[in-house]
Image 1 (cartoon, one colour):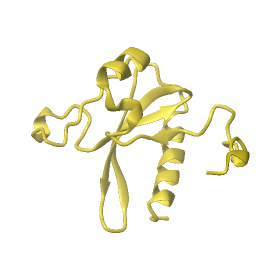
Image 2: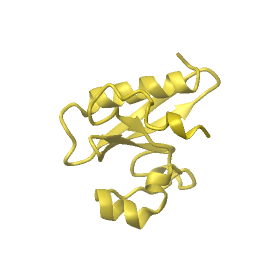
Image 3: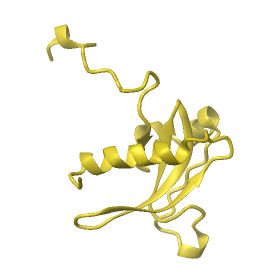
Image 4: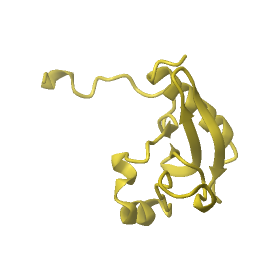
Length: 115
């Protein structure tokens, strides 16, 4: 790795960084007790639960924005489409949470080649 290029990457569009959808196995939320302690956020993988036992959906991705986990999006992927079935906001979410989800969704669809 070229040490001389460290720290020269492009800065995010926002001073606090863009909103990001995290996968259920993302390192930030993998250790559930730490996630609860740092963010006050309880995340459970519900993919293997019967539908009537799921609180937020089948494949739920937390939305990270402004250094907070502010919402959850239940996503489904088909061959050419990524769909948000349901969004649940956290009690202390910022008013712009739906817009932040739209932005994060647009970045994710671009990243997986759907746009």
